[in-house]
Image (cartoon, rainbow, N blue to C red):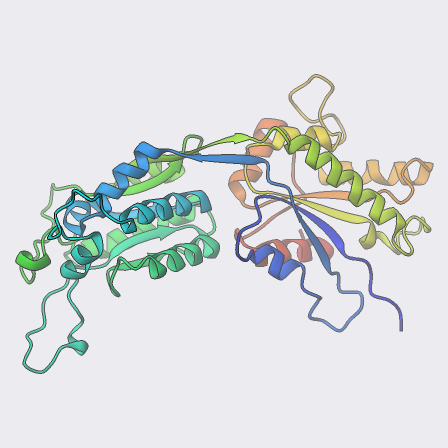
Length: 398
């Protein structure tokens, strides 16, 4: 029986998530097909960015979340579109779960007690002699993609603050900001047609059963947790809509900057993967293209930040310029250059580098800013989406 082909390196320009990372879990698994020609992969994480949370914003959010009445009086939900936003929310919940200062009166209610009082138990858990209360609708938390949805759901479930039924995570099926904005607009359109324009604004111990639905003209906003560098797709689409009650308040909860070590680390990985591919069994020994899949490596770009460093490390930037050099703008041009190097003997065993954008926003940035067309775009920002995009290129349809 022939040996399985060596794994294809996939350089993921992101931080590896802990305790588990879905990209590592899926891409490092052996191929499910018994066909030995099915490629397997070796994921390598090279994070381009470092993140710093904004303490004043975290404190402000902690004040809002300390009481559902405080939060829902002005806001109808949240928007989270990145792992960093989820991490910021984690810091908020850590503050709310911390022991109060010694000077705090013992009778002061905690955030947990306030949320549990505001959202009474469901009628199924009540005794026959207990009258069911009217519970406010759940706080809607809109997210982009399954990874952010899973992280948010896990965070809320384990926070030990919020009772069941007090929140609802939506938007896992959306793959980018535009799709999420359209989903939010559809959701609010449906609520408007049903005669509901927002969350209940009263409740708890004294307001239970006397919830007041937001009146027309009382515009609650969605809280959008963002970094200092972001596109305005979601706010622009929501604010430009005529749907009543859809406002957006952006709160900058983190800032990003490129890591000083990023360029050097990426150079090391690019060099190491090229060396490994050349020395793998069968690598660099044929010019027929029969082993071409083995000579491939992928770079997956998750954010516009750090892309210029990527282009320079891969040798595609103009000398002293701001655009990629001629012949490397298209995937066909890069492949032709790779073939010429191999046939001339300069590139024997050299891998063909393919680039994938995690979504259309990143693809558009690469094209507009650098004149660079990627080899593939993931239809959804997930490990499954990356695998599907690679498969399409392998079949010649990507």
